[in-house]
Image 1 (cartoon, rainbow, N blue to C red):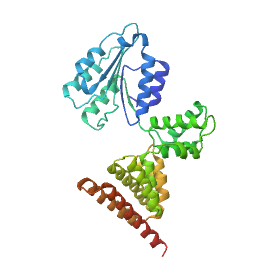
Image 2 (spheres, rainbow, N blue to C red):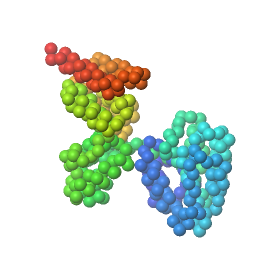
Image 3 (cartoon, rainbow, N blue to C red):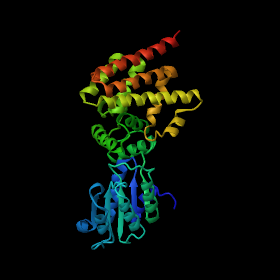
Image 4 (tube, rainbow, N blue to C red):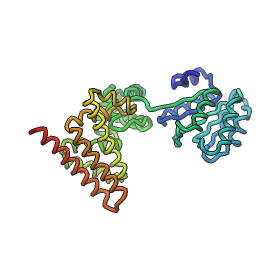
Length: 351
């Protein structure tokens, strides 16, 4: 069977021509909730929802109980809708076998949805591959992945217009770089920014003044200050993060990610490749801005200096996780070491 896409799912919802079984998973939580909502709206008459809509938490429900409701006939409606969230495929082999058997002959009046929401399945496991095969034969398998930065930015442009405001594509991409690529968060930010703009354009200045920065963006400010040798700015951002009670280990993980981005781009450039090539190879879909930032900032550092910085980050990670030392002091020491490494690189370049 040809790959079932998000476009196919939209078309089915629009035409009210549904598959009898859907396996829905992927990284983009907003899209999963959006399409579940759309399916419910199209399939279920609110007047008979208590009879025809069956919701299960897969972690706490036996497969026998789920399949009993999936076999029921709808009342005063065309379909009986069963939605199962986060059923652990490793629960028992007999449960998976029961589901596979059910999927070979799904009642025509049933729409059965297995949704992975808070649980991320191991898509490479034998059990999940069996489910994919079974759902593919019975209906549709929909992997809702993160959208590209450009696609998310276009959604924000369209969303701003619906909210009586406007934002150009470049500023929409900038908002993604500031607030992260989670679509639920971005649409909440767009509500706030459009309300502030009161019918006018959402400018970069409005984004800088009003948008909530993601942890990634705040830590990027630390790294940018470190590369520039601005100790005061780096410490100021770190103060803010501690005031917000961010986990020091998570802060370090994001710092590490920023330096890994720079190192990947630096090595790619040395080999004659662009950051676009890095994006495709390491799957930066939805956060291409990280590599644009890395491409700009890594120019100030050599491969050697980046490797040395990553060594210091790794050493700090070990100390954070294995000693009773003050975590804030460890991160402050790391910032000093990274700045000294950056200054060493700049000094060498100026000789």
